[in-house]
Length: 602
Image (cartoon, rainbow, N blue to C red):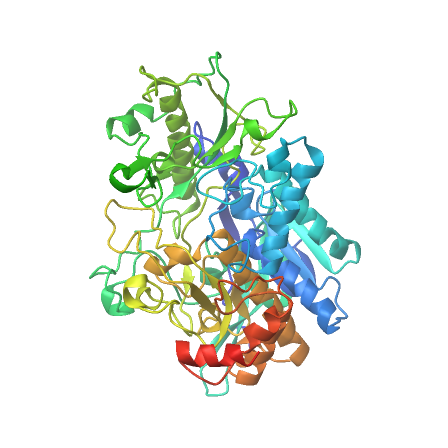
């Protein structure tokens, strides 16, 4: 096959996410010329992006290789890259360590590996700190005792657990991790499939190493794009969508009449504060504060979908707003007997610091840096407003007691290393998941639309952060699946998405972008990659065989990945695998009566 990538670019400008600052946004732009002195290395599987999906993909590929006895002459088997200096994405470098999950996440609503990862974090708090008796005895300890999540914690504990999981493979030289490394170009061949359709085959990805100020080119048989914005898709010439598609394109009831590619979900720079009574910790008035404040951006009004609860009974039943402070609190001091945590610690990721309609996809580096800096200014502006103008519970204004913690997120400005990304470029997939397949209004039974090629499950409302009164936002969903067809681009042979860049729409992305679902996407793709290599078949062709897909599903089930929703079948149940496999039948779509029959046979 001839190289048709037409890669001729020699000069690049990219944003270093760790250098973004409010005062001089353009100082974060790194410009360089591609020299002949490029380091070239090889591996079997390249995972570009070390977020939740990337870590999960790398880990699952390494585990799948061990389980199946797959070996390679190349060392390492997997290379994992990350442009910040922290692995973990949403739960670490993006600051959202109060996890967005479903109410069955502890039992049957997530992959066993994800559940175990969370339990390991809990065990660290129980082992390393003195908890009050009831908290120490709680099997599902939530250190933050917050109301949006079943588990909130300090990012450093997730970082430690990721290192514990990956380090054995590094020691065996099966894995190489390259931090501070950002993708800058792709090399591709044109490949013709079995029916004569020309598709892209990625042969190598070029990266820029911020620390060494050097370019690295990594060749791989399979490339997994786990970048937060789907960066590899345009580099490889793979078709993709971003923002809101038109109604004609998706057929969704709540899609706009005309496509709006700039209408990408808000990004946010979370920050962490303590409540220190009797102290004054007001920060310097940030740039753009008056501009944001004059538009009414800052308030304690948050997300109506989540912030209210029913209280009382009978005639006394009433709606009560849940406390702002406890929303994503990471540490509740009352749970700890020791003096390690004398104050509450809260992560602030609120409507008021969501930067709206400032898209950072497909813009030049200077514009991206400016918009990222504006996002930082917005977050520090919200902190300043909380310290000086927020209405106090007892009357008056401002909470100067709020102290900005710069150590929790590992940055000098106290903001997350990377913005919390809610929406990415999305592949044009073999199957695009649409609104009507998952929302409660269109699915009268207990579950959402059934997919025979399911490789995971999830549940979350259609959570869209963007324009006010977005049509389709805040819809409830039924428990849904992750179809393999949504994880495979139509026009790429060996490129697999493993983040928020899968085959969803602007609407359904709002339900598939959360921590446990991204973890399951990564687990599926890592396992899929190894099976493809072991069988000597490109992923695109592998997915066309029902027998191969069944092998993938069975391997995921054996590892404790639910492919079908059973509320009362925990992943640790001895017959979990047998029950899950009973649904792998040649019936499409499956109905509740057929399902009941198959379960009775187990």
